[in-house]
Length: 178
Image (tube, rainbow, N blue to C red; front, side, top):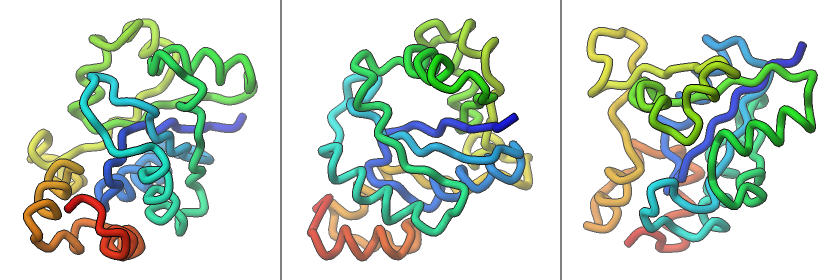
């Protein structure tokens, strides 16, 4: 049976933490594929960059990962609920075992999501340990966030060490996040 992990987010911009989280999910979660799903709109109504920009940057960020599939499924998920997306995917691909990828902080919050208890009962959750939340875990990923990257770039500071090179190059070429 094929196992696919869903990794959604605003990816505004996608950074090394995102790439490492997808790699962690593939290696530790033993999934065949990790689907990268940029959201159409932020779940909590926060402003985010245009979807096309985030899509372009995700193409750059995840291009080298053979197990990663960039998908636009969230464009067909108008409510933005993971529950709704999962139900549609399960109907389309009943032979797949689905999982969700999220930071350990996100996985702790899942019961508060729309139909969160039912969601957790239907999928495996691959909780990626993160610095700032899982200090004792030696596999904890670096404390990188998109808001940190955006803040650095907005102040004209260097953020290349936090981004895949192809993402940093595209942001610099387009002058995004200044």
